Amino acid sequence: MPQQTVLITSATGRIGKELVARLATDPAFIVRACYFSEAKADSLLALGADEVVKFDLSDPGTWATALAGVSAVYSASLDPMLQGHLAFAKELGKRRDQIKHVVRVSCMGADTNTASYVADQHASRTGAGIPLMLQHYWWGEKAMIDEGLNVTALRNNFFMNHLLKTDCENIDREGWFSNPLGDMRNSFVATRDIAEAAAVVLSEGPDRHTNKFYDITGPAPQSMSEIGADLGRAMGKTIEYRAQSMVDFEADFGATRAEFFEYLTNGFYTRCSPDFYNLTGHKPTSYFDYLTTKGASGETGLEELWQGNLWKKGEDAMKDAAKV
Image 1: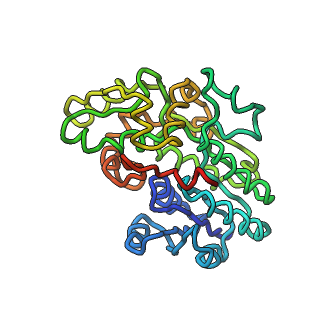
Image 2: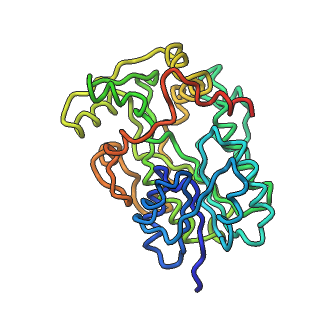
Image 3: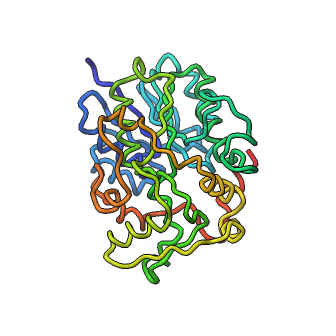
């Protein structure tokens, strides 16, 4: 069979880098990896990308070159880029005869098309309705479905590598972190597992995975104290969890982010899905193994912890996206 060209958006992100490294070993694909910053292009080539291309969701002028000859797309975008993603979905729809398969990164709870629910019932605690961020994830899926594309959605639990990034300085210098999750256990997911699931879905193709929606979770739900114990064991030091009030957390990161964390406290993200096992044939990566072993891109989760962070204390990263 002839090779197909797959476009990997957000290729310099945590999932994207892993996916580039995985698909680079698959002779069925020509891997075209997207970069936003020119300085990161060489790192994508080093991971095995066959081609690299400038791509910006806010600049439609970059889209045609990125999509030329592409038959499959891995689609991921930060929530503040929702407006750009919705416009890009329309562009993909214009090319539905060319684009045979789209794999979209989404989130558990973005399931309007696979379940029946209303905002004030889709929760395990009174008053904990669907966060705006989860509604955005659904809009991201729906935009592509409505364009008549062959879509597979990976609906992921909360990312392991996002969990503690806002507390890196405290962890490194003082040995503690805080958030409002407390004793509630969540089955946090390794981004390398999401990439592996995406690689399987892309390699097996649209005939098998079109109109499929997979919940990707970790292998076991963990509380914040248990997360701290794993992190401390990986770092060789004691790491303390200090509970934070939701009021203080919202003051630090804004209402939309706090709304999502409030959802994490209501039990909806506790369950462990079998979907990853059914796709790959093995269990998801545990938090400790994520921290201490290398993914396909060559980095451990502990190394990733100190790399980049959208969420800055004192800034509401979702302020503009909340208006969409």
